[in-house]
Length: 196
Image (cartoon, rainbow, N blue to C red):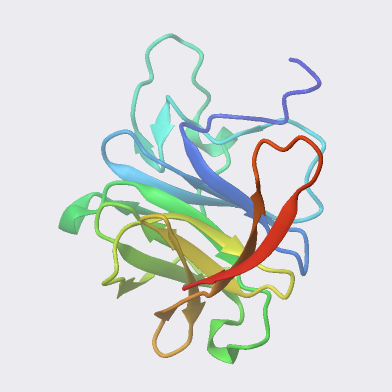
């Protein structure tokens, strides 16, 4: 194999992130037709190539064993959990393991979402049980975290902070600036703006 390839067998990893407290790698992988999966690689990350199983396996389900190059399922990195396409779920959006301190109820949880149902899910610790919460504002495109480990979600071009009132959202205030004229020949003016 090629030394620069660290992992194979991922179909469409829609966000991976590191737990800043311990270096664990979390990967949300969008499935093809039956299962969405969450993979976790504990720190320290291995130096050997990992195979997460895709094309041969979709989560723990057999997908396509043709071609003769499929390892046995036991030779692949099994997901920490997966969920099916019931109840309208169909596409995972990966997030973050909470490392902040503002919301103690979020401690020891990995947050993610399903794009199709606009639900936020989370796992506690190393458990495989998903807890779902409805997100009434719309489907989450991506998650983010700030320097303090607090979590944010992008929904329809707006960034929301995830807060603990049974996981509600708070629109963040944006402070910015404008520069004019643009283009400029000899001087530029900067004006502070505030937008909600």
